[in-house]
Image 1 (cartoon, rainbow, N blue to C red):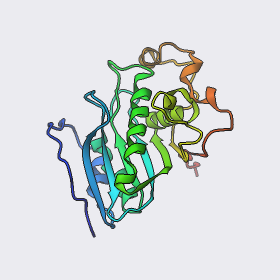
Image 2 (spheres, rainbow, N blue to C red):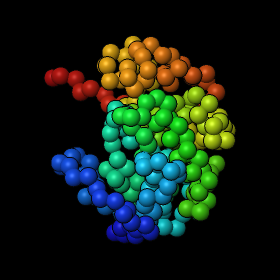
Image 3 (cartoon, rainbow, N blue to C red):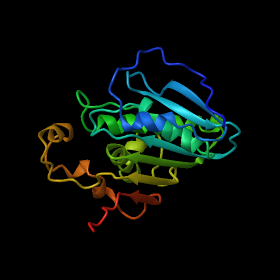
Length: 224
């Protein structure tokens, strides 16, 4: 079994926290040759950094940009190394960015950060052995929301000189919120600027012209 070799090391101190399920997942090392490039800056902000997981001998490999969840209020790319390592071990160049969170960030700051990260990933894809024409956005929960907004509402990628219909090969959403109005939570109302702003909802922009989408959610186990 081959583990990652790190090409850059974080200079900041990691926040101490309790044990979580992701810690257990991160203990597992997938088989396969891959490398980890840490703390690459896609902007000047403190949370505008990302990690890249590269198959050791990648050549024109597919590229996935993965956005984690956290209710737009928390999360860290350090918790999701198991995602990058698992995909890289199977031949996929994987990019895991941080993005602005509340407080103080509000919509659309985290979507704008994500667009910048996608631009960075597409520009750097070839140097990591990836194929920029095979770029897929993937996210879980709030991260799936962010990936969906980039895939469905063209304005965000236009701001970074990309076209969501031609520059994305696909979108994968894991348990994502795509239509959650009216917003009842006062915190989420603060994040999204109100209870009924259609322009904050991914479903508002679906036309059928988007890149192919795969939406995955858990299925409840029936009672016996």
